[in-house]
Amino acid sequence: MTNMTLAVPEDLKKIMERHKEVKWSEVARVAMWEHAKKLELMDKLVSKSKLTEREAAEIGRKIKKEVARRHGL
Image (tube, rainbow, N blue to C red):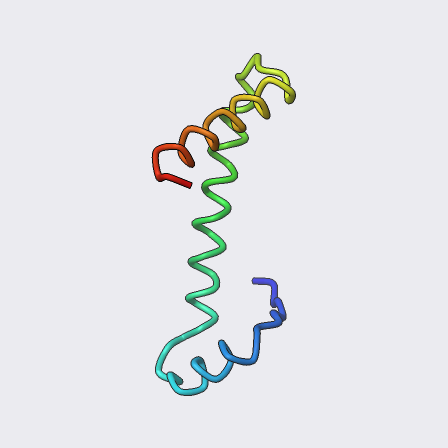
C-alpha cells in the first residue's frame, strides 16, 4: 500500500486531535474509495454518451436554473 500525506485546515486538526480514538487514515481511505467509485461510474456512463461537452454544459445550466427557481434562489 502506498502512503500519502494530506494537509488539513487547523480547525479540522484540532477536532482530529480531540478524537484520537478514530482511525483517521481509515476515514480518509473510505472517503477516497467512495469518491473513486463515483468517478468510475461517471466514466462508464460518459463513455456511452453521444452528448457533446457543450450540450452537457447546457443541460447542466438548465438544471441549475430550475433547481434555483424551485428553491426561490
